[in-house]
Image (tube, rainbow, N blue to C red; front, side, top):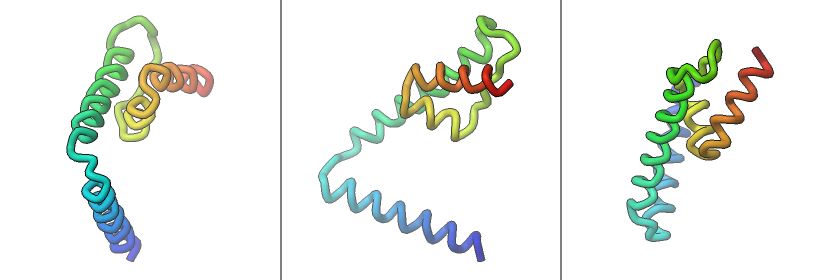
Length: 88
């Protein structure tokens, strides 16, 4: 039952997103910009994890961390590092 509701909400939100994109005539440029930000966010987290500059701190590559860094940029990586150090 819960899975059916989640799939319904996902489908409805996808339809509404497509309506907004095509009604406002945003085009597909925003999608390439979002994809670039997503790749750079994952690369930034990867560099923090494997550069060796900060030892004993590992930021997981999951949707929450990548989403935060995608939206916030470099300050998002610093925020995640601060949270990890504070809560560690």
